[in-house]
Image 1 (tube, one colour):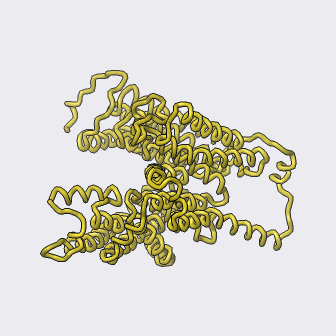
Image 2: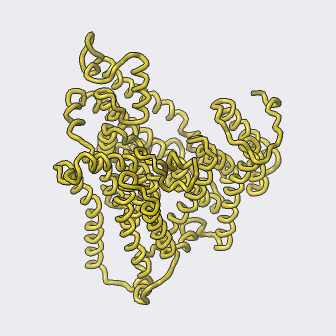
Image 3: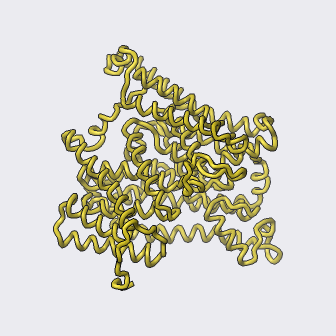
Length: 584
């Protein structure tokens, strides 16, 4: 998205496609080479090592956080705590469900992700009043520039492909984790970390390569042991069973006694299918990149439609729309105050894996698992990931301090004034209060050993770190600009009152769409809100408004209602709707 804002959508897409192709080839080759050695590789890991491997994400959280490592660790801890919402899988005890049935299955990744990442960008897009690409979109040459970037950073692509393949081998990890870890590695290995999040092409190359290489790695435990390494591999495992193919040693034995040819066919299928996919995508990249040059008033109704439908489609739960809006507000504040959103998502994804492995480790080994060689090695790697960026940052500051005379700053003057109360302090105080409440709730509700082990193991250290962050904010040492940075980040050329007014307007439209779905249902909310936004907010002419409204309505009915048959919730207002008049 930041590259698209700079008019480099074609370059970003070119880089993503080419790195994905290289990652897919790398993962397929890993599958071919791993066949003779996969058994000892997987059997060396027990539940303690799997737990520490998941905990290794904390080390990468530090890298993701740039200069705000403490905020990143707290954010990651909150993500882990969010992963505990729902019924405990063993004891069945409700944890943080507030008596709501839809939370029994836990909080969905889709509404949290859309809320944290999409809504802040939507607000900024509406405030700017321009297209996504704030500069003119380049020609097809931008795509080729992205392809060249892949080979300029070839070793980064290879390293991230290796990360994706390795994580894919570990059952239960999957592509989402490999992308975040690869992104973290790209940040950590870059000499200029400040560029990330602002349009650094390496941030596209790493996750793109890791995402596709994960599939090759995930097939290794699926084929060898019948343990799927990802959701895709689990679906493939089901297909094996339907056709009478039993994963295991037979998949590694040549014909006629085994199915080794079938195993190697996955290698070629993975390579050839990705080549075909990339070739097709390259044909339409120019059209895809040009979308970013369309003015925001025309795109906004469709963006709102997609985020609401995408959020609802995960669980078919209307309540998820409220979760998305709530995390949208949290995500917007986190952006303004310098808190890291990716770390929270990483914690949410890793949480179930960590909890399961932690319980198995303590249940089977007591506390002796802490002294296993593999656990110690992974712990040292984790600590290195956390403290290495801090050491490097201090060394850089020391070098700059030696080469340049110290200059008085506004921040240093604020620090001399003693305790200060700011927006940063208020948010940190809320974070401390929420974590403290979660710990009290776990004790007051008597979660017990099984249900309370992971919340306690994560919650109390996170609470301690949050208190330290609160103290830093009170002393002014954690200040990064505050809410006033909103004008600096977006709409800098606009008066503050215009920025505030536009922010309030788009927030009103977001809430209005939610209320419309609640009152009218998706069937009527989609055309009504699309028409109202285009006419009132976009000030479009009636012909364009009607045409775009009909397109949105047709897209909704053709794909989600008629095509996918998604069971949408009944509206509060039962308005008769003549479905028979539609040509579906």
